Image (tube, rainbow, N blue to C red):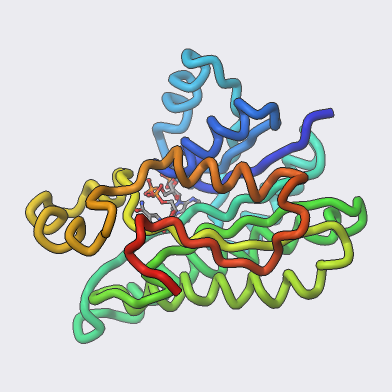
Length: 246
Ligand code: NDP
């Protein structure tokens, strides 16, 4: 039976590319979407037209009970998750001076608590079966900080602390835990930034002089999910066009 991969936020710019890549490699791919997302069906139909039969489940990754229920349903209807890609995320950018507690909480709950919420119900099963992959999508801005992103940078840096600690705990059990830290990738999240800001502030920071492509990140996810990556754990792999070298 093909391995089962669960990609949170798989209907977003990066997540979609990850779903497509994993499906092309033969994984059974499931995604989650926010319970309020009214376009989920539309997305599934569009993917079906391209030849991808994905399953999708509503799940608020920021909410522990919602995540638990989602995993329970997936396990009952399809089977245990072999590869978990914690990809769902949001930004609420503003200077710290303007940031309200609600802006902090929303970003921490969606970007960091979600990693606990989704990993907790699948990790023990991976350990028992002796094989698993947990791949956390962080950000270059969690590595180097970014103006107006104290909430986002904190959450994204926290993801990698989680990665390193859990990687140690499951290292002998066939389960790897890794972080990917993309730089600026040309998805809706980034294309929402005003073009003049992209041209004057963001692209000039990238030695390659361009945004990354979602497919490039998807290729890295595919590598980490594969058997060949069995010796890679606790790593934070940068994919940022040379923007930040640590
Ligand atoms: P998108 O905004 O395109 O996608 C984000 C996805 O997260 C959406 O599918 C959304 O689902 C989902 N999501 C948000 N909140 C929740 C929630 N509470 N419960 C369930 N799902 C939720 O962003 P990208 O594809 O660009 O980003 C994907 C990941 O990559 C994020 O974690 C982001 O921080 C990270 N990243 C992106 C970079 C970039 O340049 N694009 C750079 C570095 C990191 P729905 O629409 O159903 O709400």
